[in-house]
Amino acid sequence: MIPGDLRRRPHVVLIPLVFVTFVAVWEAAVRLWRLPDYLLPAPSAVARALVAGLASRLYVEHAWITVTEALLGFLIAAAAGIILGTVIAQFRLVERTLYPYVVAFQTLPKIAVAPLLVVWLGFGVSSKVVIAALVAFFPVLVNVIVGLKTVDGPKLDLMRSFSATRWQTFRFVTFPNALPFVFAGLDIAVVFSVLGAIVGEFVGSQRGLGNLILQFNTALDIAGMFAVLLLLAALGVALHLVMQAIQRRVIFWAQPDHVIGA
Amino acid sequence: MAALTQTYVSQDRSLVAALAEVTLDIAPGEFVTIVGPSGCGKTTLLRIMAGLQRPTSGAVHLLGRPVTGPSRSVGIVFQDPVLLPWRTVLDNVMLPVQVLGLDREIFRRRALELLALVGLSGFEGKYPHELSGGMRQRVSLARALVHDPALLLMDEPFGALDAMTREAMNLELQRIWQDSGKTVAFITHSISEAVFLGDRVVVMSPRPGRIADVLAVELARPRDLDLMASDAFGVYARKIRQALGPRGMLE
Image (cartoon, rainbow over all chains, first blue to last red; front, side, top):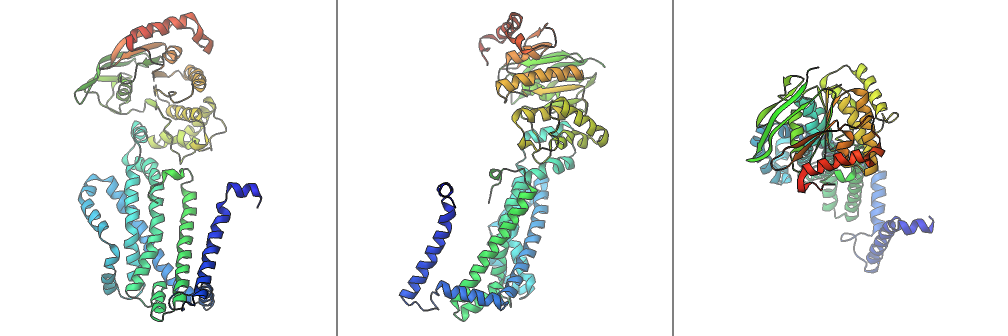
């Protein structure tokens, strides 16, 4: 890297520097004070656990379960949020009727419902899918409603001047206009769906990364827990990046500052 | 084509009279400019003419028929271009064709011709954010003309543009109007723009909005920008300023 470039974008160096310093201090502290592994494992121990877990495919199998649960939940949340949000935003009567329920349900901490869902749907994948969907649903719903309502007057006047039907106005103007908001909602939802799946696995499961954390917790394998947390962080970042890539393709015309709620 | 008549428009907005007994006839093919200070009800008048808003009392007639709602015979250019950012230039111009259910093939050719007319050949595939303000307003003009309306309504279309671009757009609009033979009602708060473009200038005064004066501008066409510095032009501008009264210092 040339020095001029470095001066303009110092964070390119600072970001890895912070990471390296953090890991080094952590490693040094653990060795210096001889901290036991069941309290705080050294980064090297975490790395070993991560490599071993990935090599034995143990983590991969559990991660696959969690990803499946999260993605299925996300897809259900996205579809339901977009459909219900559209109906609420388009029909005043539906909005007036359902809005109190939406607000009441939104303020309810969704994960509190998780034990109930495990009782109803069992320890398998389906209860986690529903919890993930439940947690991911509201960010989509709220953003769809806000997005469909923020269409500006002049665009509606334009459509009205052609005597456009309600459906035409929706298809040509209101819906595409709402897409930046919809994507802001989906971006939150994809991260929330992983949260929902993990919480579901905590409450009652046989497999999945949340279950693995509980197993390691019982065995006091703290290095293993850290390794799974790293895996979850990487998973979250990956899902977020995929969403961003899709978003850039679909709403290429939107300025980043048009998107709110992220 | 029957004469366009517009008679007795008045509107109450929460008991504030925005327009009081505005009566105006616009002849087919005529270019009428409407000038007045902010808040004189010019935009309200245009919205009523467009059928976007109902007058409290009175009626508008277009081609001999009363206006009860938006009409296919009207094309509107708004203050802002109001382009859809997710559509290409050509698709923006084609929007009225799609909504009105007109023949796509025939009107696609017309849309391309119009884009050439407004000087945007080669920009069909671009998106609005890739264009300058003046170019966007030209797209908006092409869109207003694509379904071949008899009447073109323009609401301060060049108000947001810089002075030089604005003069260039005025010249182009004159040319396009002469080529197309449309009837134009053009709202502006610029006296020189009103005189330069108009066959007649309707001077409006505010609170309540009413017509203070109507001036026929007898300057030969095509008019060029040098004309703005001429004595004859100055005489019209002064008359308008007088009609606007002491509040006439606008620009």
